[in-house]
Length: 141
Image (cartoon, rainbow, N blue to C red; front, side):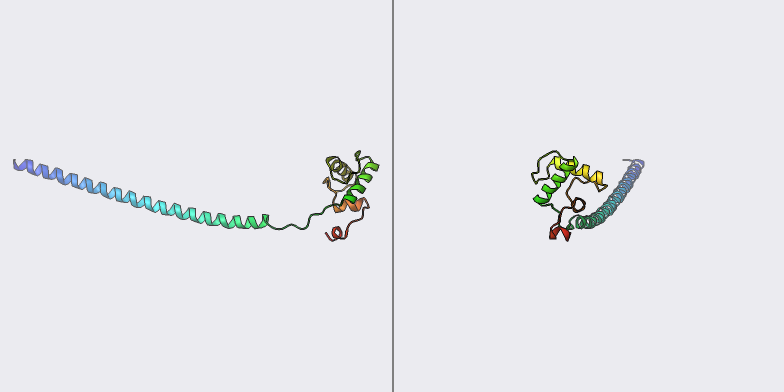
């Protein structure tokens, strides 16, 4: 082999070595950048999950708060209300002592006519407006 061929091969080998070292450095930089981004995103997700679980527990507390006792009319009170609704023409059914759909519809009409909040339920205000006596428990509600 001639000297010029040897030097030319050496130059080519050096150039290939430098190129492979540059590629290796680029790969290291890409890997480092990928790992940094992965850490940043996982930190953000962890922070968001912590915030979400905190707000969920606050919401759960609001929804889980106990309500007061439920106002319920007695069978006798319902019978009396059905009689009054029948007299006023708001109810055509029998006095059965149950809040059926016809009774609820009659209550809505009565409440509308009397300027009460229209609920279709036999609540404290409606019973008082009809002059139906409340139980002691209902009075305390």
